[in-house]
Amino acid sequence: EVAKVAENHAHLEKFANALFQICSSFVKDNPEATPEMCNNEEVGEENSCTLHRLLARASRAKPRQSRPSPAPVCNNCKHVPCLDGKKLTAGNFVADSQISYINNLNPREKKKTVKLDGSHVKFVYADADGGYTNKHDRLLIRHFKYSCE
Image (cartoon, rainbow, N blue to C red; front, side):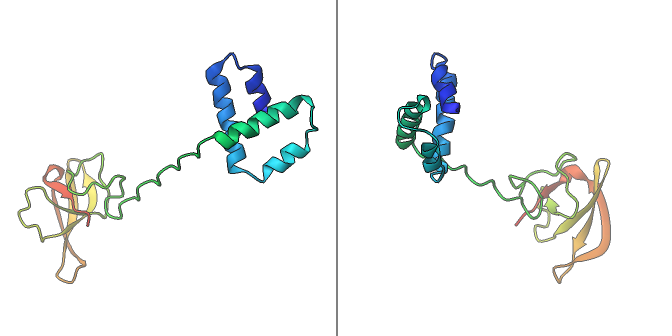
């Protein structure tokens, strides 16, 4: 029926082509539906010529490009794309993410965000075992960047 609408509105070229593209894609993506469509039409009936043209068009149609899969959400900053090395801001703040000083005073010293408090970030320090201490600190957010690994 959609192909018939496209043929009846061929003077609206973009509209008709869009409908034919949809129909062609459907036929390409659902080959099991083709015999059923053909079975519902007798040779020479009004829609049989439309069906024939649709199948011919579908056979010439290029395969649809598959969409690239979306980038995964970063486990640390919870953003797509990952904000590794990007400045921490109130707009991109995520609790429980690893951060470091922008000026890398001590690049090995890891910190994990706890919460945002106005223009300050509250964080905890990493301990020697790879966990985090109970020692909290609070500094201006502008001094930090995400450290996603």
